[in-house]
Image 1: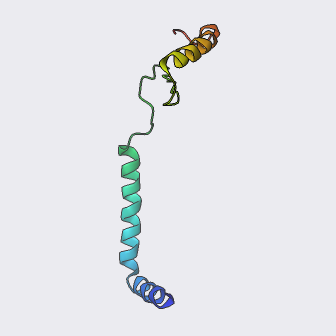
Image 2: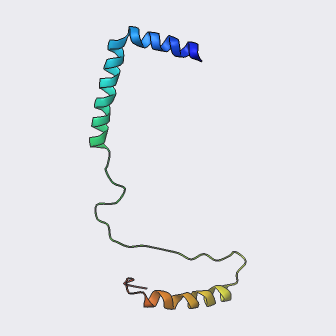
Image 3: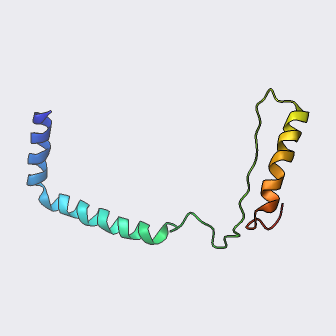
Length: 85
């Protein structure tokens, strides 16, 4: 492994102008890509909506899941920050 490092280091030192051109080119490419690539993960118009879901165990019956949903609903209805339920 040290032999490989020594060979590549010697080659790089002999071809320093080429290495400098690679450095300048990669720096220029970084600046170009920084300007081209979108800057955020969020859309321009964030609606502020949050969508959620509830998943029950696969062995739960429809009636039991309905009962659990009826127990949870008052929590959502009394939360002031939720506009619609």
